[in-house]
Image (cartoon, rainbow, N blue to C red; front, top):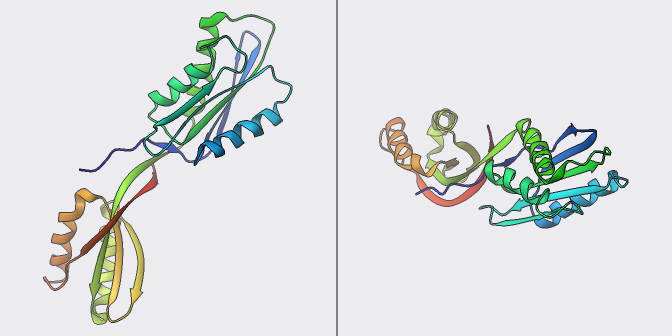
Length: 215
C-alpha cells in the first residue's frame, strides 16, 4: 500500500495584507529542516528589523510530524497558532510562515488578530505552486544491446504516460534501464514490458524513494 505524504511548496511567496492600517507581510517558504526554517525567520527579522512583530509557524518532516509556532509578542494564541492551523489545513509540510506586522494605530482585538494572521498566510498560499510528494519504486530492465534502441523508446514512452521517471542507462554485458514508477503500476509495467519485448524481458524491482512532483 502506497503511503500518502503531505505536500510542500515549490518556491517562497510574499503577500501583503492591510487591515485597519496595520500591514501584515506574509512570507511562506519551503524548507528542509528546522534549521532551514530558523534561517528564514532570522532573515525576515533582519529585513523587517523595525517591525513590532514577526510571528512564525512551521511544519517539518516527511509526515509533517514536527510543528512549532510563535506569537512574538502578540496576545497568546492570536498569531502563531492560527498561522500553524492554516498550514495544517492545507496539508503542508517542510514549510515555514513568517508574518511581519507594522502596527497601524488601531487595535484589532483577539478575533481581528486571528483573522488577519490566518488570512495573510492563506492568501500567500493561494498564490503558491505546490509540490506533491510521491513514493516511487525502482524498476530495472536489462536487455541485449541489439534491442536497446527499441526498448529505450518504448520505456521512455511508458514513463511519460504513467507518471514515471526515466532514469540512467548503464551499458555493460547488457543495456540496463532504470525507471522510477508508482508502486501501484508494478503489475502494469511487468505486463507491458513482456508485451513489447515478446516475453523476452521482465523488470526487477529495487528500493523506493520519495520525490517531489510539481502540480
